Length: 559
Image (cartoon, rainbow, N blue to C red; front, side, top):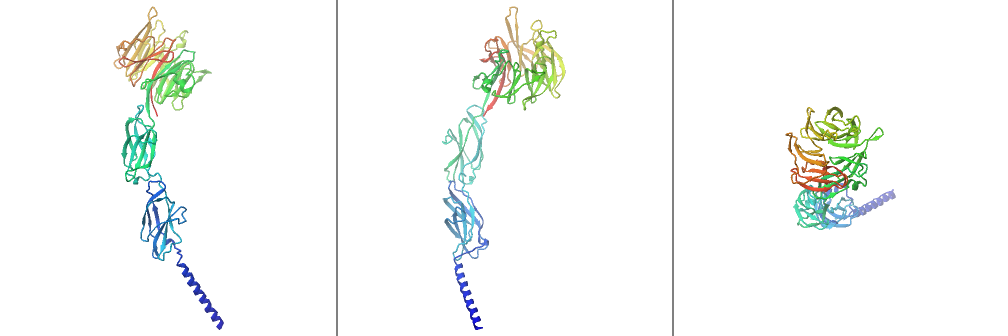
């Protein structure tokens, strides 16, 4: 019994001794709980130099601070190892300002107890080094001054992520994208656009920020400037000689006075084809009817081919003659007696309607299409020339009427009231070239006079009448008819004494109000005379090909 009591006493002493030793070891360890950790830790790097950080480290103090004395701040690159001690702050503080120091990926906040022992667990925040946060992004510029070598427009960007630390943005020009040249403006760092007034072309714009001391930072944003400029001029379609496959188009640039020949060949590496008949510039595209080749080429305004529209009926290729545009469509006469409607998006013929024999010109007015049916291929047959103008309803695309006119109708024009003017070529003998007007409402036909070619501009009908006298000398007269008053204004619209021999075509353009007269001797390159509206010569050009069929105004923007 005494031995058992002695054993129990010895065991109690051993336990007390162990407990005393364990308590003594706890003085060097601090196994802290979540309640002793700071929360909502945040840090925003405001240092504008890459590889360095500066800013306010903020947090909320621990819920339980009864046993705590301070927070120790460490730098760490892996988020677990305390690599560099930054500082120690009182447990009651919730902010610490970090001065410029080398970048570290994490900041650790370690609680320390009143026995000066750091906790076994800690809180941390990952640091984003705002390298380049002083540089604007998404820099864009679109030139809206369409004069060559001049620029203007809106320079836009997204403000720098560190814009609150910047004092301003400075906009410079630059020729190489590195050296700042002309200072254009200083703007607030919160601004995200600046309007550049018209000025000479610079190759780059540079946007650079300044810090709080108004010192420009090292990095900057830049954008290369693309000069947008207008090309404005006239295309000349040279028909060439039938069967010789030598049609071509030339272009005269009004702004630069540059003249280019064989534009289609240069753009596409192939010939335009045989007998260019007509052109129309519509929207962003050009449509070129090549009669002998049986094709309508669709190109962009620089002559690059987008499509070749061909059609076959009865195993025979249909041959296009005249073109016009109206309400989103382009219409083409086909010489086998049809009018085709072209889808200007799909670039294909969407439907055809039968009209008269060998249709030539087509024009649109008052939701109707008017087609001149020449019957030219029957000139030496008992059937003879056609003598009608077909009327086709635009909505139904059906022929609704045939209007009788003088035989062999060919060229057409429309005035602002929708009246249709038609030149009938007659029979080249006892029926002369006759100009007629078709009333837009009643379709009544009235004879106006004689004409061989014509073109309408601002309700002025410019007319050329060419005939041969008894000795086969060509006699040419130039008239102007006022479609509003329905009176002939003059029989000499060339007022500066310029002599134009062997006229072959006449066109006008609605922008410059120029008059274009093409000439041909059927052997050599033609000439194109360009006159002002009051009849004074602007320019005479060698057209670069045979038989200039027409001149067609075009303009576009190059970016």
